[in-house]
Length: 336
Image (tube, rainbow, N blue to C red; front, top):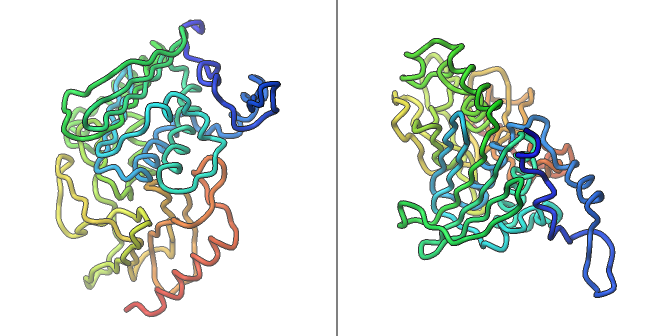
């Protein structure tokens, strides 16, 4: 069984950003050194590579995203963006490059996703990109890497299509999870009880994603806002153009799982009631929840401009975060 799994060795041929100078003047990195370096970027949970795909799509400026999770494979589609085939062919190079600018940040998120997806015992991983006129597909398997031209069924929008093929054991695990629920109604109406583990992870951590995101054909439901009993709207803070922001929506309306309820993103939202929590969202993913003594009861803020650890899924407590937190406290003091 293990012989059919895709391994990290398939991705390391061009990992040349760190190492020693060879006789031709080319920077090289030994395979063992590369593997040790890549280990630093592994996520706490193997399935968190899906969160990194969300972050990649948000950073790249995707118009919409979709995750399709089935027994045999997981597909993730980012619509409205495309990447250079050369960047995808040597995707792990971007782990060791500074994330300067949204495109490089997106590639860094994507590289961490691929690095961790390999650890899910995948039998194959493919990346396909379409710029509206032409497309390329790069695929990795136990036999190595292939590269060929590619075109999607709908050719009107640029897109990135990633697919992870599961082992039979992983497929069985997904199937048994769904069977064990025995709740067909929940599966039909889109409640949490009717979702597989992949969808549950994104519902828990990507609910404030500013880019419309669908899970197996159903749009993410709206987050709950703790509104006061006497009524009143939450206070939305507008975002700056470079900040991806957080999801914005009409809190009072009722929506079904097939209704797309996403407005133009904001930077933050605050309410008068709640348990004095502040949630931080970095490129569409929840990366920290903290309890604060502040004028309002509850809030969600973009963490744009703050620093993260190597995985991009945890904030670093430093001056940048402290300034951002103080700015929020100063801003909310004047509300209501």
